[in-house]
Image 1: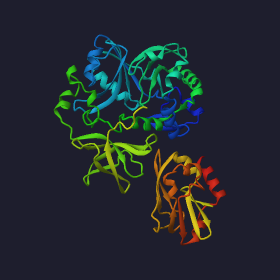
Image 2: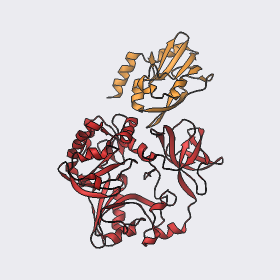
Image 3: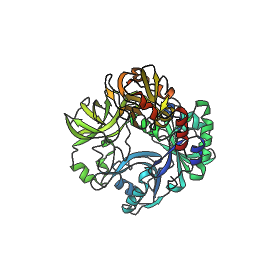
Image 4: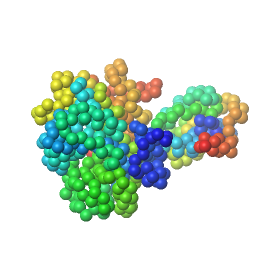
Length: 358
Length: 123
């Protein structure tokens, strides 16, 4: 385990009794008190996640906008300064290299957040396609905390003078949090209201402790990757490596909404537009009690078609759910079968957005 | 109560044997959400699969500590899978068997021996 990377909050996790696992080469907490308890804390109050393993890249200079517009499928040109844009970035075959959050500080100052397991791959890809933009991989000196749940705002408000109600959904601001400079966005991976807070690695422990303290009155819970997965699955959010990979296009994934062909050219555009998908990712609900997981076979009309990409037991809906590939022309509410170990379980297809915030 | 290396326990009460998983096992699995228990009337050999227990993190096979016929399974675990976490050796019992060879228990660990075995695992 000694070769695994550790975030600036490793000591905090150990002190809280976290169960640590290897996640993409990082020693990360999978749970503290339990996945169900942590999941419910986020849905009902407030949970705090260390996501410092995520990567951050800056793109600056007069070619920054041109670079990002060519790199991703979504339209950063239409975004205003202070707005976040979620987008996949594709290779020439329209396969997804990674999905990212693009923070437009200005047309010549873009902040990009990438998945932890893809940071090196993404940065190399960006450098290869830089179009003259000034790129810097600032991942090692940057940490990130996610604060999620209905009580996230009141918690964070206790440690900043900035009026957080002015930061709208998918907007961000650079403010002082617990006496540290931080980039704070109203974004997240849980389907609840909440914030993602980026700051210098050396300030992470201070911010974490301040938030744990501020959140005490709301019963704040530290949450691990286990709860992170159940929350995002319920919310209908894709996980790179599970649901989307470089063998999956944004049309096969439920990401057509992120593709804006009118904005101009981008890597993979030609292939993407020219290739009607033969399969698509949908949500499903298992009709008998078992737990579906990534890699289970999906049978359509008695024949093996493809695989489950993500599966779990939904703590909020109290039933087994997941995402899987089905034929592109299948309608909602179709019956399929999921093979778990040696048994076939009936399942019903549905929207991948299982959970709607109350 | 006797224990297996795979963290199942068996408790003989008169002519029947109650079977479940140990406290160590439920801790390792985390929140239990569903179980796949055997059919009543089926027979099982010692060491053979007695079903599966699903937790949020993983699914784990349950191996029968002894050979016998399945007389009853704990159907209440369907609505209350968390009993396996809360009370793994009592309320969370999984199956009731009619043992065919009680001497099989001689090869299993006593509570003391199991405690020592667990200490050895954590080293």
